[in-house]
Structures are given as C-alpha cells and as structure tokens.
Length: 318
Image 1 (tube, helix red, strand yellow):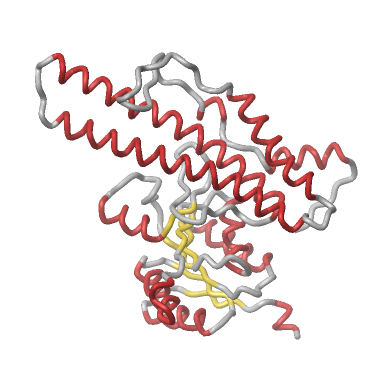
Image 2 (tube, one colour):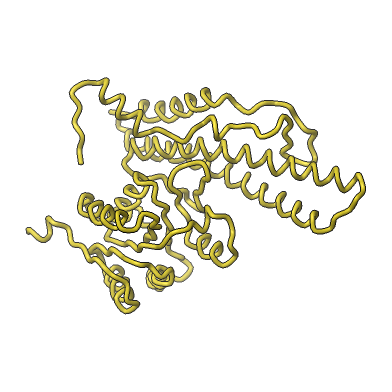
C-alpha cells in the first residue's frame, strides 16, 4: 500500500523507522578487555569502533550513493552500487564467521586432550580469546550489513540477497539462507542461524508478477496461523519471488533461497522443485507463471501439501 504524507517531517520520521536497524551498542559490545584476531598477533587493548559513529557512517555511505545518482541518467545504477556496499560487509562477515568456526573447532579438539601443562593452558586461553574476538567483529560486520541491507530495501523496494552464501545474523533481522546450507545444517545440527526452528512454507511465482497485495495478503494469513514459519522460495530475481522476499524482510521471516544449479542444464528448475518438496512444507503458495510453477504445483499436490494457486487479479478481470 502506498503511504501518503502531509509534510516532510512525517516523511523523515517514516523513513527513519523503515531503516531502523538492530542495536549497534549490542553488536559492537566488547566481551573482554583484550582482543586477539590471530594467534600470530599479540593481544591488543584497542577498542571497538564507536557504535553511534558506525551507525551514522553507514547511513551516510548509503544515502550518498542514492543522492548522487537520484534524478540523473545514472539513477538506475544506484541500487547496484548500494548492493555492492552491503555485499562487501556480507563477504567480510562470512570470512570472520569461517575463521571463528575454525578457531572454535581447534579449541574443541584441544579440550578433548586435556593437559595440565602451562603450554596447554596458554594455548587454550589464546584460542578462546581469538574465537571471542572474531565473534565480536563478526557481530559488528553483520550489524552494519543488516543496516545497509535495510536501507537498500527501503530505497529500491527489493530485499538484499548476497550473490553467494547465506546471510545470517544472530543479532539482526530476518535471514536469507542458501538451500544447501539449510540442508547441511539440518543434517549436521549446525548453528541455529543455518537451521532455524520453524516449519517451511513453500513459495514460487512468475517473473512478470506485479500484484504484490495479493501475495502479501496470503502470506499474512499463513503467518497468523504459523508464526514460526520459514519461507522457501525459488529465488528468482524479479516478479513474485522478489515480492515474497520483500514481505519476509518486512516481517522478519527467515527465507531459504533455492537457487538454480546451472550445472544441471535444462533439469535445473525441476531438480529445484524436488528440493523444495523435499523440505516437507506444511503449506505452499504457487503464483501463475510458467511450466516450472505448474510442475511445482503438481509435485506439491502429489506430496499432499495444502496448496494455494494464485492468479493476478488483473488477469482474472481481463
């Protein structure tokens, strides 16, 4: 629904509310007085960046991109540049997450072979400090990424989704989780971020779909009945899937992105449909599109999944 404003002050307040982000103070919190990002480096007493300055800087960076290109022939590219900024924070956060996992695994292995020596104790303390320091930095990066993603969403109307890898955040907003990460996490009982508790609702639709209100109405009804729902989509970059992802971002619903595996050629879309059905969704929405959507609807019916098949109201009235 389009919202109208009678003055600029109300518009500014609404914009500030829409780009509101997780608590920077919490995300930038220092757990210890000393930090160590690598065993090869000496511990440091340097503080984390000031959270208020970090928040203001992120808003300035993103606003500058959109303001620079607005009302110019390059306006169409502002979203791509802003997406790149948000994605850069995602990439660094993912690297920090991987390093934290590696340090935590080393610490776990070390604790299995307890040794009363001073060398052993020192190594445990160093690994503990490293894992904790990496966790602090990852939380801060994820907070800034989520803030950039929120601004990107408000300015472009499209939810931010990284080009590869899952976008998860323990102290942030709704996550976008790659299907492969989701499958692996369920099998291996990895972090809750990758295997969120809740039941799956499947979604797919055509790339030319424009009736966002109809999709949002159905998703609102399902969420009212299933508050812990996880939305699994066919992850297309326009049309119905983008509308559903926008709804998920607004309502803090986690999204499992089922992207095409291009190496499978013409079979890719049908294999993706099988994967979605394999999530055992409790309910599904399929919006009119191509034979791919029809194939998914048939497979969901065969699996006994309660299914809503939607057509755009303009098409029904045409």
